[in-house]
Image (cartoon, rainbow, N blue to C red; front, side, top):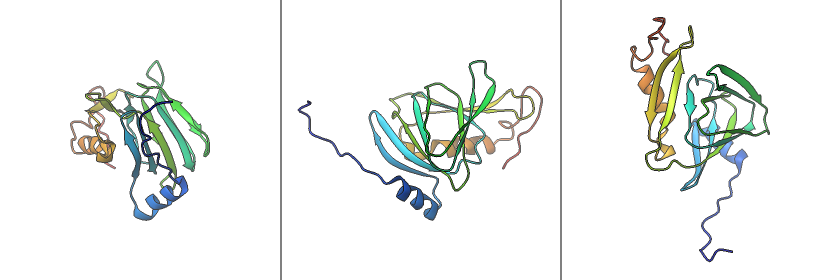
Length: 174
């Protein structure tokens, strides 16, 4: 047994957290963020089209509603798996993945807080030819800063970023 003092051990009601997100209209509630642990509840990711490449492993648990997880396999091809409510999925570090779920669905995500200088990558692929369309790289030092929304803003603010270099298709703004 360690002689170090016991740190705060948060107990969180997932149904209450989901209800609060629904009532406030917020998309994310960070439950805790410590050196080796990060947990948050997310509401509705129906709009997602990018693939996130996380430098740490990730565990996702659909609290309410089902999760449709799009991911890129070892050959770079998109695949889709369904994760029913109450199930859990482990996503290894470096796996390009895109969690998508209904506006009234809620997902618990647990991962390691980023180490100094680690880079998260957000990639979009052309909906016409499946070539890499755009990539945003970011240092995610505080998840409360909503890095996903910032990556989307960068993409949608630039028509050049939304134009495929391979086929010329332009991804429309939502």
